[in-house]
Image (cartoon, rainbow, N blue to C red; front, side, top):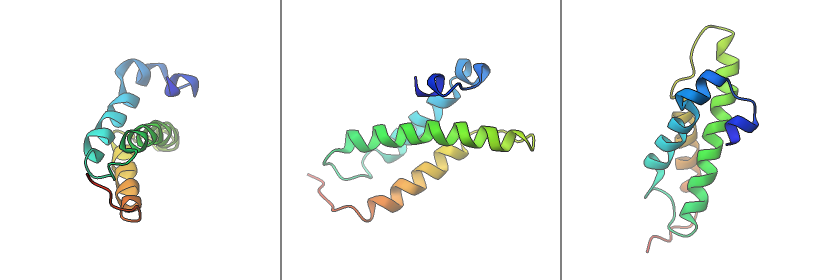
Length: 91
């Protein structure tokens, strides 16, 4: 939905590329984030993956390079680094 609101490329929307990166992010981060509000963190990470894909796809298109799963990698790294600063509350 966010990708559509941002005016994402029709072919990328139909191929599900935006959702693919978000799904990978959720799978990678599930269990790595504090249990308190984990769903909120996963939704935020998924939204960031959509934004990152939109930005990277536009930026890399000028060089003829596809973004593929680069947004997934960057968002997961960012959230894993941030999770180290959050209080551990795994229960």
